[in-house]
Image 1 (cartoon, rainbow, N blue to C red):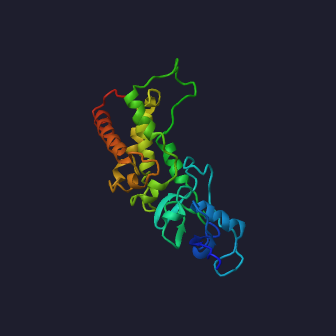
Image 2 (cartoon, rainbow, N blue to C red; image 1 turned 60 degrees about the horizontal axis):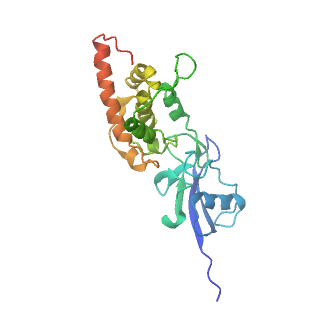
Length: 255
């Protein structure tokens, strides 16, 4: 007697264009050992036929490195925002439900426009200035203890998962979200990056800044890199308080 072939059942929330209405489509693809969600999506792309046997359009999604480094393949899998490249089929309940993140506008199917997050990073100047404005000399040094925790913060791949999990990041306010707040701590700690510290702190004290964080701590639970986001937010909060007092009392504090 022939062994019955295993299959994977998926229910995918689709959307044909940014202004289109979302709808669900079911698929069934052949099972292979050690498959991840992207492997299943590739099967659909190779043979775009839904569970009813009808020809359909290939499911659209983003991906890059396939090693949980680029952050491009974020989506909601069985109700949880995560990276589809490391979501193993064997560990997921079937039918596997795939949907785009709701925090960001949908481009098509499972792909979203994460411009909101990138704009927030620009707002807080999440970079180290190396444009020749300052003489950097031989290059700054960091204490090993500081370098270790700074490295943990630098693992952020702007995947958007923490913003998706945060209840305060929505279309009703301008909260920049956990990732940009953590990056403020990272770049303020850098010997060169701290040259823009005052500007970053000023940005955090405007609308959409620190005051909109409700401390739900969802972000730290879903971060695929295990970044201590809530610790960073607390540290930045302390810095912001000190910055506010010094600014209010007219201190010549500039970094």
